[in-house]
Amino acid sequence: MALLNYFGGLQEVKKASIHEIQKVSGINLALAIKIVETLKS
Image (tube, rainbow, N blue to C red; front, side, top):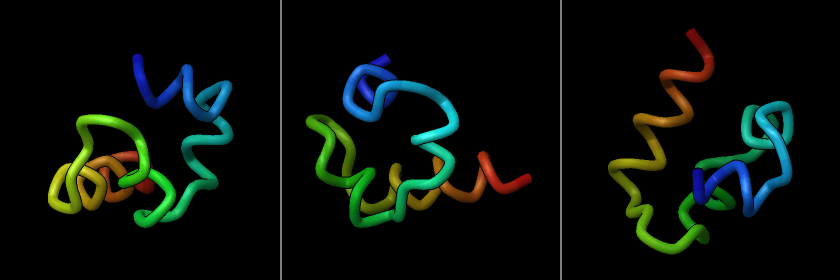
């Protein structure tokens, strides 16, 4: 939910880089990588 609030929607999250996702509170590098990999598949 924090990702959607931060980026404003799913399409924006899909466009975000690992570095951008990592800026969201509570998301570390490992989780950011998993999120990006999941959204790509």
